[in-house]
Length: 125
Image 1 (cartoon, rainbow, N blue to C red):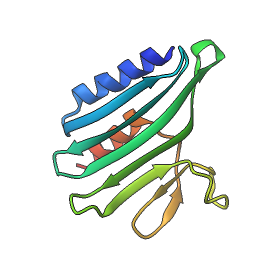
Image 2: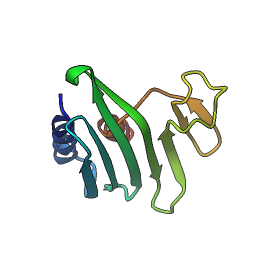
Image 3: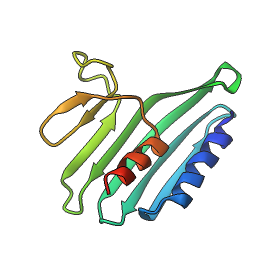
Image 4: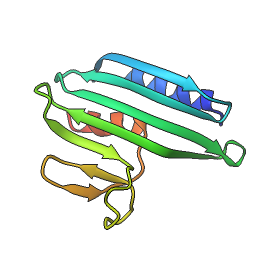
């Protein structure tokens, strides 16, 4: 896999989504194996997702890593629904640094990417 393949996977997921009503996404190819995706989705319930992920593909295209990511999902009144990120500010959590913020708490979570987040949002609507 190269970065263009990952970008295509994300583009295909956006096109197939039944919940994205508008999107503004920038695909920034840094090399054959690195890139950044940054953007905004507006969903059918008028909630909004602001996101950024940096992608590195290693081991000859076999391993995809995300050294940094953030997915901030808020409702139409700009109140937090969830925020997924890997900022290293909760070292006491299991699965550090990967975690999710809810309005009233923070919990450990798995590594996620754009496709994962779209599936999470879709399953909640």
